[in-house]
Length: 111
Ligand code: 5GP
Image 1 (cartoon, helix red, strand yellow):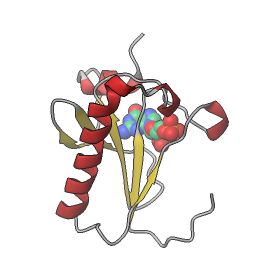
Image 2: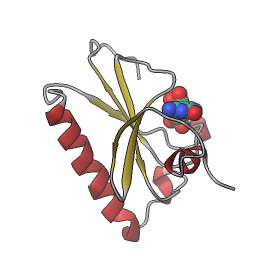
Image 3: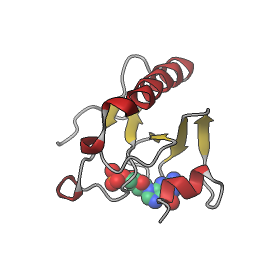
């Protein structure tokens, strides 16, 4: 079965798309926890961070480059948080790897 994010990638569901290329899509989180709350999603349905294998590292590199590029374009270089919830005990709810990018909020976060 397709993941929620695969349905967004395939335009079966709507999302507010910030950026897209052949290997990565970036969307606004539907329930933002900060003024900027984006999800950086690889266009391959790796379920969790723990499932990452060597052959996926091209996607991880692409996600890194997209984050750096968007941070520069949106003047966020001085501060943004990246969060990956890995597995149900960490509160992961969508089992398609994604990195949360949060910005423009005071950094007194509780982990
Ligand atoms: P997780 O809890 O798996 O780390 O993060 C999943 C995130 O996806 C949550 O922050 C949640 O708000 C977001 N989300 C869930 N459903 C949708 C949706 O349909 N569209 C968008 N844009 N975000 C979603």
